[in-house]
Amino acid sequence: MNVVSYRPGPDDLSYTFGGRPAVESVAPGAVLELYTEDCFGGRVRGTADLPSQVCEFPYLNPVTGPFHVEGAEPGDTLALHFVSIEPARDWAVSTTFPHFGALTSTHTTATLQPPLEEAVWMYEVDAERRTVRYRSRRGDFAVEMPLDPMHGTVGVAPAAAEARMTITPDAHGGNMDTPELRAGVTVYLGVNVPGALFAIGDGHCRQGHGEVCGTAVEAAMNTVVAVELIKGVATPWPRLEDDRHIMSTGSARPLEDAYRISQHDLVTWTASLTGLDELDAYQLVSQGGEAPVGNVCDTNYTMVAKLPKAYLGDPDVYGSAHARLRALGEEYLSTR
Image (cartoon, rainbow, N blue to C red; front, side, top):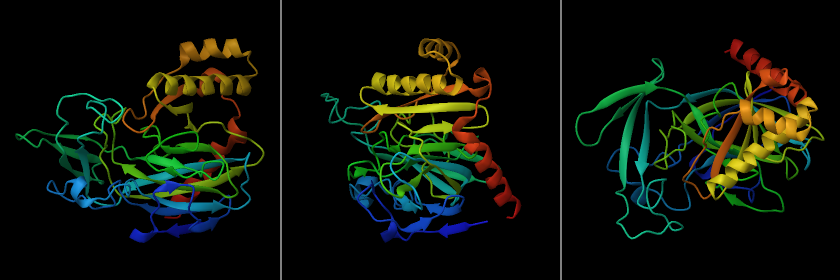
């Protein structure tokens, strides 16, 4: 088994997709053991550490990578299977920002009321018990919630030599912030440049749909990813697959356009997998689909369209890449 371990130092972190050379080259079939830093670069360690004081814009939301995938060319599809995602520390952090989040004014949604307070919440992470503990800042309320690790940011270099901030989700991936991207899920990304140049970051111990306040339970992660390359097959928007569902994403503003993109991709994908007429596929998705929200706070918003594979007759998705990568991941885990 080809296992590659990579742990970036602070100067090795990337803050864009595109515009940066690869940190490592990997072959399809490799398993990567990665460390990813939290969205604040590990600088917010207590309630007194306000991000505006300890972080420097635009050096937020760092990703680990990019990685050059041998043989990847524009028009191919990169498949990344998340074998495991585990917190690297016993604490995590969340915040509110004055002009960031779904329930405050922003530079594009201008209002006259005062901005929200900048505040920090620290979470206790118990990986053994699989919980995170929320504590209110005012008063003594506390509650445990299930640990549900995920990655908010994964993507490849955009086309046309473009560089995009890691905080922006779009057709290349990026900061989609969907809780669906957890261990056991395969993400499919269209390759835009030679080598694909993929990167991963923004680990969350858990996140509500929408990431309403602008941050999740932000954490450093130890993550294992299996890599496969699907030659000659294009993927227009990031897609996800787990054992029971296929999922399409769309990222845009306004939110209804992100919704339309994700639904359009799921309808056309369903038609191609089943041979259904497009209107028949439209009807099937309309009655059998779900629409989990990704994020509603970033520079673009993200929606997910989700459909059980059982409604499609358990089709052959990307040549059964998910099943192969899951088997590779299980083989890796059996040796650890």
